[in-house]
Amino acid sequence: MRRDERRTTQRERLLDGMLAAVAREGYAGATVSRAIANAGVSRPTFYEYFPDRDACFLATHERAARGLLEYVREGVREEEPRQAFRGAACALLRHAEEQRDATRLLGDQALAAGSRALDARDAALAQLARVVEEALARAAPDASAPDLPARALLGGLQRSLAAWLRNSALHAASPAQELTALLASFERPLGEHRWRALRPGPPLRPSPHVATLALQAPRPLPPGRSRASHAEIERNQRERILFATAGVASERGYGATTVSDILAAARVDRRVFYAHFRDRQDAFLAAHELAFPHAIGVAASAYFSAESWPERVWEGIRATTQFYDTYVLFGRLGFVEAHAVGPAAIRSVDDHRMAFTVFLQEGNQHARRLLSSAAMEAVASAIFEIGYIHARARRGRAWQLSRYTPLAAHIALTPFIGVAAAGAAIDSLQARADPAQPA
Image (tube, rainbow, N blue to C red; front, side):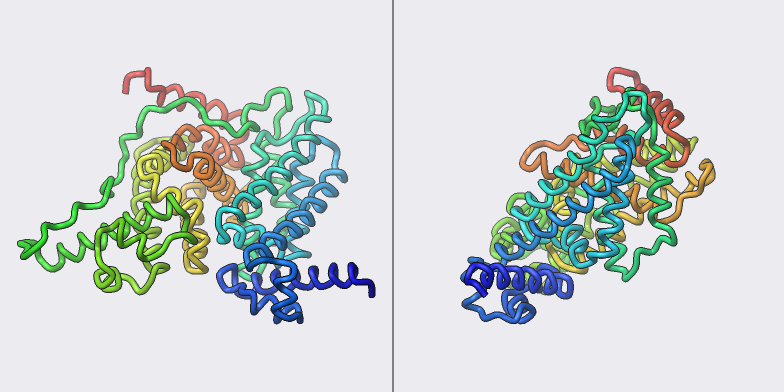
């Protein structure tokens, strides 16, 4: 074997070894030792090709993303241009069935691997979206196609497929048929599309449904003997640590955050930290869990305050997005950083996303075709992906996630009541939420 051929073979074996390690252990457990053991090469050989574990992971991600891109290109080519969404979605499903390890790497482990991997994931999804948009550009203006932002749909579907694989099966009985029916519900003539561009709408009047969660950490108690009870002291320390954890993660990312960083931000010593939390991961999990009951609480309060189901969905989304506009630190932690914390946090993200499908279930009372739990999860994942995209774009700046309420409501309502009825409801509700209108 020629030297260049041997080097190519060894590199491919290392990529295969990293992929297998990620599939079994997740990103955090995919060490150089596991990758070389799977590949059957020596450690010096590994370092001939890659400077570190992350470089190997990124190369593995790049190869997997190229493979998925070919699946999507082929799937879109096999359909007429107006059916580009269907071709791409079914290609993602076929890829998940045939390339399970690669689907999990692309769907959730890339979210765990730091800022460069997040950039790679975003770029790969942008490529997939361009394939769909380029095909739709070749269709006649009066041809009907799903009125959806391709980037959010494909990113959400990628999340759902990875979650289903983590649970050992693509659990829908006929996932391709369900995806096709779901996409068909969004169809309207291309010349009438209004939701394909992923951009915010106008500002909305604030929702009256707000959380009781403090806006910032409590001040440290005065030094010396305190009149506060032991329980009050512990609560003060814990809340300061949780807010500090969310703040440092928002600024630096989970991977770059140390316990020392958290101690400095919380203004506590190491002994106090370890009295409350086992380690950094435990603190991150607790910070992630702190916000969710408040988010679901304001969503439920807003949902049940309205009369019709479309109005309830609108109000629930408006209150939830406003919550994350207010608590930006916890928004970034939930939408971007949680996967990096480990399997427990990934399960928590899945559970939280599924919890919001409760508000969709009433829609089946209005639907011509009942949506399965898998279809509702795909809807919730597409909306969640919008939150992720916004969090990535607004890093270090004020959030305006509530301005995506109309788009999120379109994605939530349309599969149940149809694109025309959903559009009419959203226009009416948006007009009522115009800040210029009286409350």
